[in-house]
Length: 473
Image 1 (cartoon, rainbow, N blue to C red):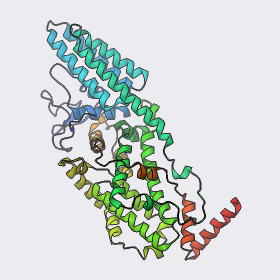
Image 2 (image 1 turned 60 degrees about the vertical axis):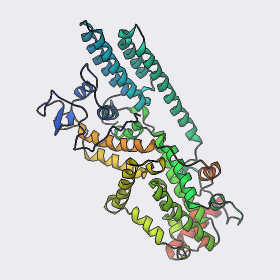
Image 3 (image 1 turned 180 degrees about the vertical axis):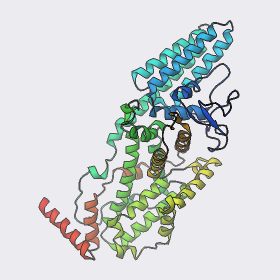
Image 4 (image 1 turned 45 degrees about the horizontal axis):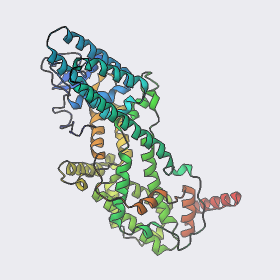
């Protein structure tokens, strides 16, 4: 991913994608409004992706088109079309006598390929894409036979690409070793635990340190999410309607792994609270997690904060009235206010915007941290896709829609590049990632054992659970 920010301004201002000195707003393909590219045919959009002697698309346009094109065409097909245009332009330049112009053009094509392989390496996972890449590179670098400078750049680009593909492949292999979703773990049935049983407080009793370790895990997980993973939210939904949609990579491994982490953290919080027998210690555990969630908020780690709050709001925890009566809930009320779902999570979005602004002007990695609530981020992309059509009535691609989707995805990619400023604590992280977590059924059992049922509905639930236990025995 290029380090230079490519979305320097919001949509509706000067984010036009490229300078068009020879085309005004009367041009019908593509179409511009107030200097912004809003629609065009796929062919015209691809043509504007390819550099010429006098033109090179800016990074905003390159990123948006490469990201959104997979909804309409396979990456290897797009690469083939780009190659055809490149070769055609090269042939036209070869008819002249100015060799320097040909080299200048070739250098621009190599730069485009370099940006493509760096930003979307997974587009080159199959043999077809790699073959197209090598073919274009070979044809373009023929003008540089004398000093071989461009061939050296191509060689380095290829090495970096293969390294990126290898790294991602290794991550997908080790993800299977991560703790699986709670629903797949089966029911963990235990009697009341011994007082000496290990809990999170025996590993880390400092809320700030635990929040920092949670942030370390979040940044590590999110670093393995790529823009094309996020775009699959759109392309996978359209796969039944568009046979050219990229259906070969519909398994969003990294998104699933990150979502599973959120669920496991929520269930770990609930497990840590429900399995404590003594009310005083249970109260201390609840207050501890409230403090951890508050520290996560201060850091800018909204995803862990939401997971912790979700865990404490699960029914087996929320029903522990005797425990909650002893908890100082003022801090928890503030946290719930920030995550109030009313008005489309308006309070959270305000806090997220504040963290994003802080990140833009930050001088340290600590201040740059922004980890949004991931499922809300995904829902935003989902609704953007559902509300706006991919194509306009005239058949052109609704590029304005994809500007907005790519802007949101780029923000996420910028945040994920922050280097974690906290030192890894293997002992704490090992506990967070491997400690046993109860299923929903086991949580209710532990909850009822700690504080008995108080109404007919709870009594019926408890009776059903005990009957299930006896039948299994």
